[in-house]
Image (tube, rainbow, N blue to C red; front, side, top):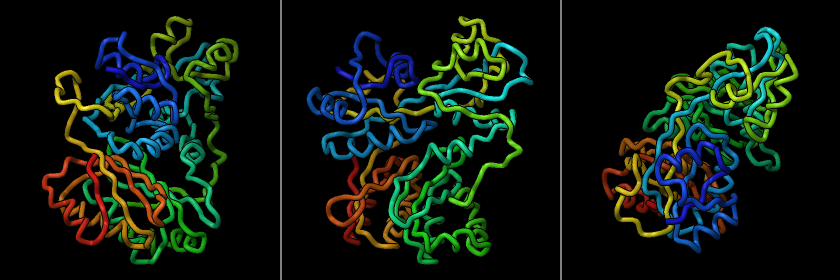
Length: 359
C-alpha cells in the first residue's frame, strides 16, 4: 500500500503513524504531484477536513474530485494538543506566533489573551477574487438541514450566490464563506435580513465592512510552521509560541497553559483511495458513517437551496461543502455528508435534472 501525506510531523503525518506502520509511507507534495501519484500508484491519501486551515484542502479537493476512480473509505479522528510557550513573563506577551491552523484551533484561549483570531481568519479564509463580488460569512449550527434553511433566506430575497465553502468553527458551529454580488451587500447588512437569519438561529458574522477593534492588544503572527519562530521566542520577551509540550520542554520554554486548545478538540482526515480496498480491518480506527458525494447543478439562483432541501428531507448532515465551476455552465459541489439511508436520495435529485454522484 502506498500513501500520499503531508510534511513530516504534521498532524496528518501523526494520523498516518497511528493508522499504519511508519515505514510504509511515501511523502508527496500538494496538487499535481499528489494527483499524479494517486493515479499512478493506486494508493490511499489522508485529506484533513475538520479543524484545518482551509486553502490547502480546497486546492487539493478541486483536483481530487476530478479523479473519478477516487472514493472515501471513511475518516480518522485525531486528538489535537497544543501548549502556549514563552520564556519571560506572561504579561509581557505582545505577539503569539504559530501556523494559521494552530491559531484557529486555539482561538478560544487566544481571546482570553486579548488577541482577535477573527481578524486573522478573515484573511486566512479569503474566497477567490471575482469581479464585483463581496465576501460574507454565515455562522451556522452543525445540524442536518441548517445550510438549506439559511440559503432559503437568501433565495427569498433573490440573493445571487457566486461561491461557497464551509469551515468548522467550533465542534458545534460551521462558518460558510460566500461570495455575493456587491449590489446585495446592503441587504445582507440590513436588520431585516439578519433578523430573518436569527429566527433560524444563524447569523451573518463578517463582511467586507468589518475591521479590527483597537482594544485587541496581542498580535497574531502567521508562520509557515509552529516552530519557525522558535529561536525568536527564546530571546524576545514580547513573543510567545503555540507548539507541542515536547517541543516546549526540549527548548527550555515555560508553558503558560496546557492544553492551549479545547480538551475535546480533534481533527478529522478523510481516507481517500484510488484502489479497490475491500478489507477495512487494515485501516485501524477508521469511521465509516460519512460518504463523499459530488452534486452537479446548473447556474441558477435557487438550485443549491432546492437540492439541499432534498438532502435535508433525508436528515443528512453535511460536514464539508464547496463550490467549483465546471465546464458545462454550471457548478459542482463536492461534499462530505452522513451516509445516505436510501438510494432514493439520488433518484430524487435526478428527478429535477440534477446529478448526485456518491464517491
